Amino acid sequence: MGKKRKQSEADIAAEVKKEEIAPERPKRTLLGFKTNPESKRENETPGFRNKEKVLVTCSRRISYRYRHLMLNLVDLLPHCKKDNKVEAKESKGTALNELVELKSCSSCLFFECRKGKDLYLWMAKCPNGPSVKFLVNAVHTMEELKLTGNHLKGSRPLLTFSSKFDEKPHWTLLKEMITQIFGIPKDHRKSKPYHDHVFVFSIADDHIWFRNYQISCPYNGSQKLDRGDLEKMTLIEVGPRFCLNPIKIFGGSFGGPTLYENPFYVSPNQIRSLEKRKMAGKYAKKVKAKTRRKMHELENPLEVDEFADMWKE
Image (cartoon, rainbow, N blue to C red; front, side, top):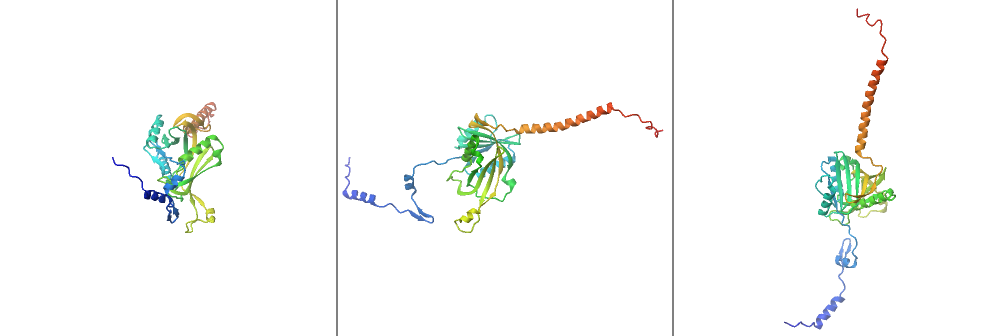
């Protein structure tokens, strides 16, 4: 075994010199000095990083309008993952939770179509919940509207909510869920670091109305905007449009204890049955009028006319 070489005085002096040498000057770029990312990481404390991913899927036998609405939302959310159609059965909750876990997502948007007419939207945080079931009304897709607004695909939106979201606890819970699902994480690989459009969520008649607007401002050719130009900003609608009617809020993912139930909710089946009864009521009135006319004729017969057969002879 060889003996370990003793450290010479020259080596010790070289190490002291290395310690005394000043740190490297940061590289200069067009936007300023670029600091070393490793030194930045050493000084910074590790904070929260948003890794939200949303699974977007739908049930079988969905109509083309509702499928187009789902695809519009997929285009607006670069942090979402699309999957094949799922059978809308009683056990759909377990199947969807497994899909969310396989796709390594944390939230789910499930579009469930019933009878080819009614669209229900499940918004769930997986796997522990909560989850919300909405009835979707007033659907207008981008292809239908043909609006003049336009913005970058994959850019991050600003989320705006009306003041009514802070009035009741169930609206506050829905606001938090919408913020987590529709808010695109910063520095996501498919997103662009710009804010050029706004998602507007407003409450009217106990319904949540969704609108998407482009932020348009005058451009003078320079990189920075003047304060006067910022005040001239306008909003141009892009689409799509839809309205969410909350039905129930569950404690778990796609089920569990009921946290809130909408007392003003009327199912579309009940509305259709009432309309059919009204139509049936019209027919029943006609039949009653005919029987009343016959009874009246029997009770009040016409008198025999003397001159009825005069010209027959």
